[in-house]
Structures are given as structure tokens and as C-alpha cells.
Length: 109
Image 1 (tube, rainbow, N blue to C red):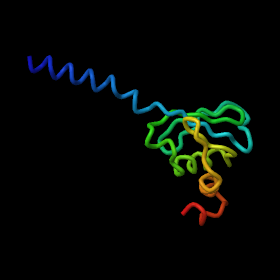
Image 2: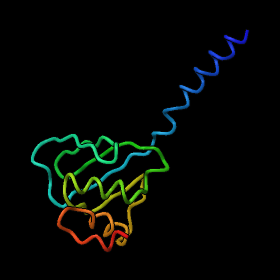
Image 3: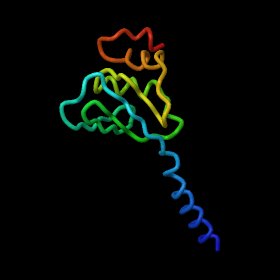
Image 4: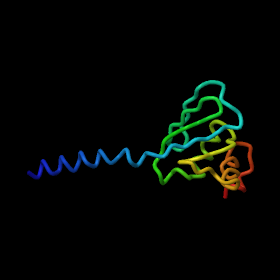
């Protein structure tokens, strides 16, 4: 009986995992990528096509400036960054874009 209970608990915990990765992030790039590109930034796989990159992350990471900043290091500046219908404000977007190579990082602090 204990084994069945443990097995059931294990299955239920696996069923709950997808609920944590349910926020879609969208970054619109200042300069489009020339071809479809897969990018890994902050341990997150982004799919970039044209001027748009998308990924899916846990809710707690959705509004992360550092996640956005790490993406810009790979694909360049972003013009908008949004999660679940909520876009970064101008100051958050400035911090995001400040992390690119060759850019001042004082804003990112």
C-alpha cells in the first residue's frame, strides 16, 4: 500500500510541473535576425525569427531584467519585452539593453 501511495504521489508531482512553465516571453528586436535562430540565454532557450524572440519560463522569472539583459548579449538590443500581456517600462528596458557588449552598464545596477 505504501508503494502505491508513493507512486501516486510521484505521478501527481510530475503532473504539476508544467504549471510552473506557463509564461510566454516575447522580445521584439531592434534589428531582426537574418535567419531563424535558437539562442540560450540565462539557461533559457529562445526561438528568434525575424524581429521577434519568444520563450516560455516559470512565472517567477517572467519579469527578470537579467534574463532580458542576457538575451540582448546574444541577439542585440530589444525594443519591447513583454510577459503575459505586461511590457517592461522604459527604465526596465534601458537596464535590459545596458548589458550588451560595448554598452555602459551603470544603468543596469
